Length: 188
Length: 88
Length: 347
Image 1 (tube, rainbow over the protein chains, first blue to last red):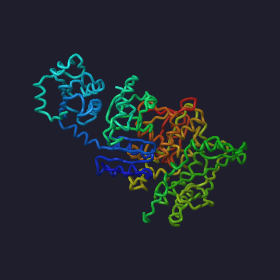
Image 2 (image 1 turned 135 degrees about the vertical axis):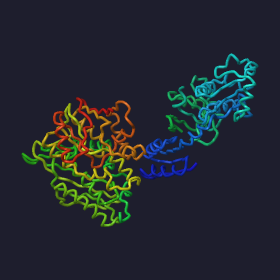
Image 3 (image 1 turned 45 degrees about the horizontal axis):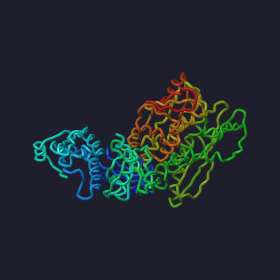
Image 4 (image 1 turned 120 degrees about the horizontal axis):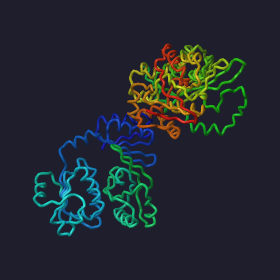
């Protein structure tokens, strides 16, 4: 990411420099040390319809500015990917860590662009929409935003979790295979 | 949902501390959420914990000798996100 | 400009935005014992008014004011004109006419004598236009250039206008558009090319003298000029001094056409933020008022218009007279509602 250091500059120079830099790049990290300059650059970002994230640490400010026409373009591409999740922990290794990583992973799915088209839970993956409370909440939000969340019926049955499924619906192998066959798939 | 648009974020020096903190805070009845650290705070793949802005988890973590690398307030509003460091 | 000197580059803040913050100033003034017990002093420090007024004979009141600031534009002649217009304005805001002026100058010698001469010429031309005389001055070496005037004026007994006599039921008229601080910031940022002809620069060079005769003829209750504390800051001084509640109609405000755009872009001077900080708890915003209009309400003005509080049965007559004299921007921007120092901003 391109970095723009406007520390020590007097207003309105930080705004002008940011404006110039944004004409050349779509994503910019701006370093500031003045509250007024920070507020003014944030106004500029808003005016230019950019996505802006402020990291404030005492008198040090960092602004990450992203043009949203990029984001919008991405959203226009029809649909997101299919996530095929066959384990309740993320990656190989200690279970405790894998479990925490999976929670983080599911929470992050809410913030990606475009959102997933579909999330399929299979084998021990079905423990996520049934037993992982935090992930359940996030999956519910994904469902509300139009993401299809499905769990393998045979797997739920095997682990005795059918009754515990609170988010999404139950699916069978035919549907699963069809989704894997047609969509762009991410397997975990 | 309380922990999406406005929350405080605990960032740790190690994943072990994050996991331990999660256990302690959950036992104490805090409403928390395990999430990856925001990319703006660090490029590392660390784990962080979101807590309700009304809660103050620092005291309990200190009692349990869990070090935090940072404590932030996060406010999201449409295209704008503010991450304000509250404490080292 | 022929020579490449950019005057505004030598100053951190420009124009009236360079004023010390009102909180800080009032903290300091409270620590000082000014020993001003003379009853001939009609308006002094305690009133937060535009100038001091002193009854020096049975039928005449002396008005005295000083105002200077850092460059707001790069052209030295224009800067001189704006600074002088701004300094003379305090006398008009009291309802008086200026007699004598003295230059107050801070100058960086390396900028060249010609630049200083142009600044002073700009000031001298405005003072002459006001019908007053420059009678001297004082110049010191200063890395950050500064210019302004100390002005002495006079007014007949019973004609003095203060900012503390607004009455419930009054209408509020503003004679110049708002947004000068924002435009000055955009000028500094290089966003405005034809500076001399910009409406805000023209307004900053326009004396507030013409409004005085109609105000005196028709009779108004209170007057002040809008400068560094922004519209809301000067309204607050009027509301506090008169112990009245003021309502501002935000959709009626005259604002320079491009200032709203620049405000959205973040061309907001630091003074607007400090004004806001000082006034936030004194102003109530009713309903959804757009952020750029809120920013303009706090924007520090340089050589701004007069803010006049006039009784309801006189407001039409006053407006007719103001328009007849070419003060086309005069607009009713609010009402004085009742008692208890307060400001409300409605749609």
